[in-house]
Length: 278
Image 1: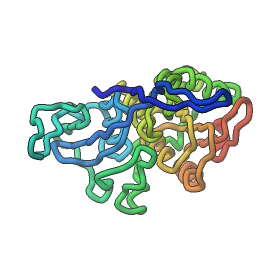
Image 2: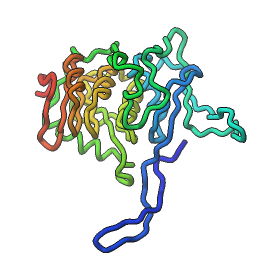
Image 3: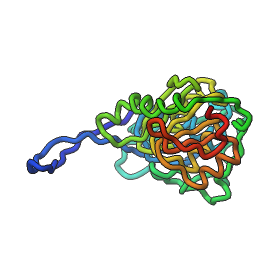
């Protein structure tokens, strides 16, 4: 497993002058995801919880519906035949997921380009028409009710669970909460979509999908893709400390997701299905 953080020399400049020191950086390494031995995608992520990441990614792409849809998920070596490369070297940056018999592999029309960055999970999509995926866990009828007082506690609760952020200051966070504000799971990553995939992968592995009656909290903005991931996992409410995009609001409204943005202290904006915020 790769390191979660690395130490690098830096020159710190301030009112008192300049001095050399060591700084702690969040690790960023590629993860190649294979399905039944076939390369599907490469994403830049913070190492850790890679099996959850793979399950969450395949859940939100519509491939998986339960943990039983996967037979094995294992690391394999990254040998690609280059001269002098060590065939037996395992970098823990290649993960192969074997699907159970009868589970359809990813639709070629939904495949991403082979490389996506940590900051953008949708930009590698083959076409915009492939972005709107159909969910088997629609949250539209979910009777979740949550108070503004509970919602106001979630950013600090998520921040308190981001242990690696304390040392690096460079990671996104995502957490899944109950309607009473209980934190079920929190994950960190250099990519906000990866952090969400890790959380939703945890939920799938814990047999908590559809994630009815839960709130998904993210540390950054609410993009279209994060709303899509909530929809695919059956999450009825997505909240973010920053702004949503116009397409995120449109999808949330269409799919029956309550979308809360600018959640800071006791203030927040509810952009869709406000009846759940009581």
